[in-house]
Every structure is written in structure tokens, then in C-alpha cells.
Amino acid sequence: MKILVVGGGGREHVLVWKIAQSPRVTHLFCAPGNAGMASLAESVDIKADDVEGLLRFAKEKEIDLTVVGPELPLSLGIVDRFEAAGRRIFGPHRAASEIETSKVFSKSLMEKYGIPSPAARVVSIEEAIQRVPTLPMPIVLKVEGLAAGKGVVVAKTPQEAMEGLERFKAMGPAASQIILEEYIEGLEISFFVVTDGTIALPLASSHDHKQVFDGGHGPNTGGMGAVSPTPRLSAEIESEIMSKVIAPTLQGLASEGTPYQGVLYAGLMLSAEGISVLEFNARWGDPEAQAILPRLKTDWVEVMEATLDHRLDRIKLEWKEAAATCVVLASEGYPGSYRKGDNISGLDNADLPDVFIFHAGTERQGDRWVTRGGRVLGVTALGASLAESRHKAYQAIGRISFPGMHFRSDIGATG
Ligand code: GLY
Image (cartoon, rainbow, N blue to C red; front, side, top):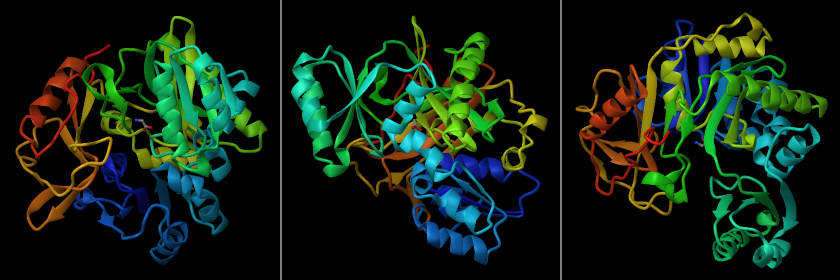
């Protein structure tokens, strides 16, 4: 079986790593891929948003299954385009992916189908600016559309809210709609299901750490680390999430004529008042995938095929008992503008038992590894307990260095 993975970050590296373990795979490609996965998949020089280029490649190489990592190609309708051309592809259709790409669509879906989420109001950017002095703080401000991880501001003061709105305004006309959302205090988790639109199987639980600095300080990033399972989730809450969030969301999407297939990611806040959906994403989380997939025993290719063939009822996902911690090593300056081209040393030394190093932003120059992205590497370790997996991950990290390297030292430490 020939498989093409679309994307080139840490999430795609772990997907390629997992897919490569399937006995069914004969050829594995990744477009554009990254240097770190070269031993597992052939990198293809086609960008993840070049839908026509990817389709031409899939036809030419007779790819049996295409797997989409990031949201951008989903928002461009890659799944619809491939299916129209008779090619198998795993991921949601364009309309269903709006659950991530349009915060206004997602919010109205949640309101219409009674899915618990913070109270919110959609306003123009001008109205948001006018109302800021009268708004209760903290408040969450979100800009409509995809904003490459920069579309959400949690403002504690009117001044922070104003600064956030000014940043949104600088994005131009695309940032015309703003969602003013109630701030909810609690513990965040990342909850994933694999679904064919009707049947949904929960994946192993996880939480990520979004702020750049220890203790949850500093600006938000795509995620500085993740653990699986998360101690924040009990079996009771998981079943409540399945019945109060996942089931009505899938039914709602189907009723709207946009049934969902693929991995659905609910970003949830667990608070004294219960469960609230902060956002949905139409894909695996990154770095959550780097903590969850190393724990999965079941063949992920089989799971994707079962999703497309509507036989998920016959799949039982099996997980290693082990806990996983993934810590992201980032370039100096990230999540702002960051340094590139620095020598990475110690990668071979860090290849310890139960440690997996996933590349997100690296490049091979001769026999050297150099930095090329904001998030450079994800170091995942498995251990008998969360504490043991943390210990192993940080032990491996102690052997890796590059100028300006920074990472959080408290991944998985804060319950
Ligand atoms: N870790 C957050 C995300 O993937 O969106």
C-alpha cells in the first residue's frame, strides 16, 4: 500500500513514524516532509497547500491513501478534490473543517446544538474596540478565520485587550469579525476522537502546555509540550464528553449536511461548572500527537481504512500502559520571529531507550543538523508513570543543544 502524508512538522513526523510500522505499507511519502523523517518516508517537494500538485503526485504514483496533517489544505478542500478525482484520503471535507477554520461557524454550531461552551458574542473589530473599556476582565478575544496560532488573546486588563485588538486589526480585512468570549478558569485538556461521522472512538487523553514559559507565563504558542494520558481526565468525565460534546457535535454537523470524517480535536476547559468547549480543530494536535501516537498499539493505517469504510465498530483501539511526555525544543525568539540556521548537537547521544525524537523545524546540511523552524524538535519519552516519562524526556533533552534553545521545564508537572 502506498501512502502519502501531507505536512512537514512534528505531527507529521510522528504520523509517518506510526504509519511506517504498519505491515501493510510498501511505500511512504511525505509532502513536503522534513529532514528528520528521511529514513521513514520519501520527502516530496510539494507544499501542503498545493492541492492540485498533491493530486497530480497521488495520481502519478498511484497513492492508495493520502493522510492530511495540517488544517490549511483541509480549508482549501483537499479532501473534496481528491474524492472527486476518485482518490482515497483521510480527513474532513472542507465544509466540515470549518469547525476549526471558522470560529463563527463553530460557535453557532455549538449554540444551535446545545454543546457546552463559554458565552460569546460576534462583533465587528470597531465595536470590539469601543466596548473594551466596559467589558469584564479577563476576557477572551478571538479573530475569525485561520490566524496561524495568533488568533486568540486572553486579556486580563482592558489595555491587554486593546493591544490584542490592535494586533488583529493589523491582520487587515480578514480580521473583520471578532468573538468576545467569557473567560473560564479551569484545567484545559485536548480530547481527540477518530470518527466516520457516526461512530466515534475516543483516543488516549492528553493535555498540552500552550504558553511559552514555565508556570503558564508568556504568550501562547502552538504548544510547548504535551502528556498522555492526562491526569486531568477521569473515566466519568470522558464519558460525559462523549455524550455532551462529541455526539451532539457529530449529529449537528451531519444535520447541517457536513458530516465529519477523520480525527476531531476538542479543546476543552474542565472547571467547577463542568465541561466547556473552547475550540474545535479538524486534525491531530501538535504536539499532542507526539505524546499519544507512541502509546497506540493498534495499526493506525487499519484505523484510517476502517474510518473510510464505515467499520469503526469493529476496531478496538489498544494502548500501551505507559505514560508519555513530549517536550518541545524551540528556537530563540519563538513564538515571535526566531533564529534559524543554528547547529544542533547531541541528537545521536539523545537516542535513549523509550525516547523518540520527532523533528519539526530542522534541516540537514552535510553531516550537520541545523535549526529551521520555531518549534525545532519534540522529545517524547515513555515511562511506567508520568513522572518517569518526564524524567526520561528531560534526561534526553540534557544531551541536545543549539544556540538559543529554550523549552519548558514543567511539562506534565502541573496536574
Ligand atoms: N497543540 C495545539 C494545537 O495543535 O492546536
